[in-house]
Image 1 (cartoon, chains in turn yellow, cyan):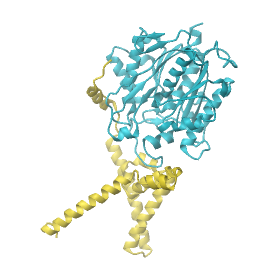
Image 2 (spheres, chains in turn red, blue; image 1 turned 90 degrees about the vertical axis):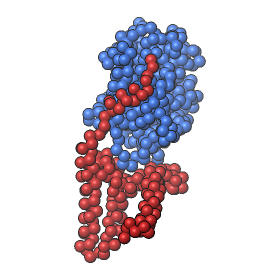
Image 3 (cartoon, helix red, strand yellow; image 1 turned 180 degrees about the horizontal axis):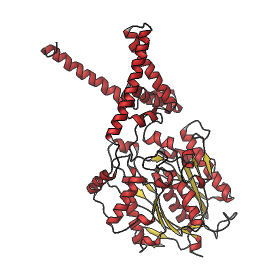
Image 4 (cartoon, chains in turn red, brown; image 1 turned 30 degrees about the vertical axis):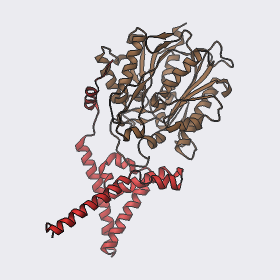
Length: 151
Length: 348
């Protein structure tokens, strides 16, 4: 029997189930919104205790990272992502998860070749291209200032 | 006896004397739970690492199968075994204490089929009187190697499968010449023939849709088998594919329909049998070399022994991708090995 590759690939697309877009977007909205509300709660709480603007911002981020790492260790965070999708991946908690998970997984391979080499296997691209993107945007901003586009 | 282009029918079919399987908690909660010889509730099996856990799974399954058969490791001449990990880590460490000469095999999820084909050919040729064929997979080691660390949150697409934590082993023997104790007290199942599969690559690049990548290989081996044996689908009570899952099974049925074959009445798929997809969150179904091996030992062989089925084409399918080939954007080559299993009562 012979298989027409192109035809088969087109056919597979028609029978492969996809996530319902609206349902996924709604779940992402709820999850992401909940994480951000939690962050705002921490911030407001600290401010009510009399902490300064800068300190509360730092502590809020640290608290969310800590929470995410603990939930990763307990195996809860992946379940949160499976349900909430990008809503749980995009906030800083998702980034913390992407660093903590490989660190935990590769611990058995040692502190250098395990944790050390593999801790950024998932977040590495985000860091690299994030820095690159900020560099490019900085350059554009600088050029914009020079040319009088930005004031 | 050679048949057609690729098949073999054995004049004196080697017997599957005894078998054993061990799986994890999730598999035990599935429809095949009652057929397992043992359930491991601790995913780590008391080991420090996931890889060591899968090795321990193989070690325990081999020992359990030998014990069931009333055999010692020394009664087994060769071992044909494999798993999903790079350099066959689980197998090499898992069977080292057994002291049985080893052929380590990699056929991805089709490994059990490859092991049984080679075991049967070896026994039939008189190169061994009794051998062991075994394959395993572990959810955690497979995720780590092929996807993401367990703790990482990644949304699994609906076409993705769930790697089975499990291991199955079968004793293949020549009943007339095998020395030592008689296994299982009488013939139960024989390997009547085999149709080794060739690589079929339909250009699917999505590693989260392995069923789609393997379905053309399964279709090819089924057609090859029927052509070589000059027979049709009614020859079999069941044709049980490896782990095509939901999407791959549908693709297989449609591919064969185009060839004028209506597979649906006799088709079953290990990936769909092993979990209850409504109740257990496994998306397209089970996969991994342990999937076929466990389904074989927990459902297929017992049904043949009980005479519920007389003749089955057991067709483990494999997606032969690697993490590197996937990153390099290459397609997923598929393979499927056909093993003709017959109830002994068919020959009496």
